[in-house]
Length: 208
Image (cartoon, rainbow, N blue to C red; front, top):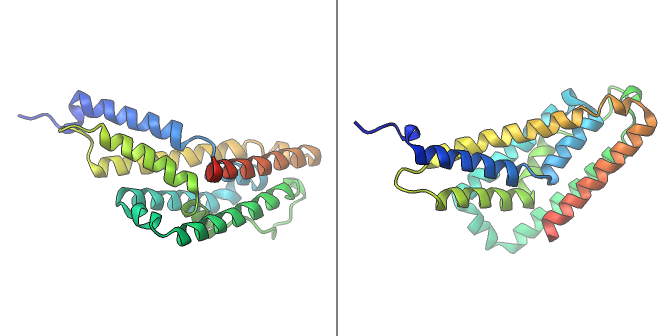
């Protein structure tokens, strides 16, 4: 009797390699991950969950676009790609301004506007690093497959779970700063650092 696929040694090695590649490439600082961290620090864990969910769903949408080959069609439409990049850059600059000028948590009114689910989704689908990083990881997993390689749905499932885990960790890391941000001086410094890092990682993703 043939062993189940995941009991064979090669698929397990490919699975581990896929997780490690996703952790290093997709989990590295970029516009989406830094924005989630900055939102968690500036607005707290609970008030950043909707934004983070939007980022996660948008990044999974990018994964599906890459897996189905739609990126090739998008690449043939430079006008659309330029429009998405401009929209993403504009929102990232706006978000960086909002983070840099956010008041300390202790002084924040309940009605203060916070990043929305839709804003996170739109940023994720227009994030240039997401397409490059996911395409690199997905292509690497595909090229390493043999007859007993990981199937398409297995790769999609693993990468979707990695997207959730990576952004959840970045959010928690940012929210860990929220206690410090109750002090006005520390709040201003950390928010400015996060805002500058967000702009820098976006510039590197677009021009790097």
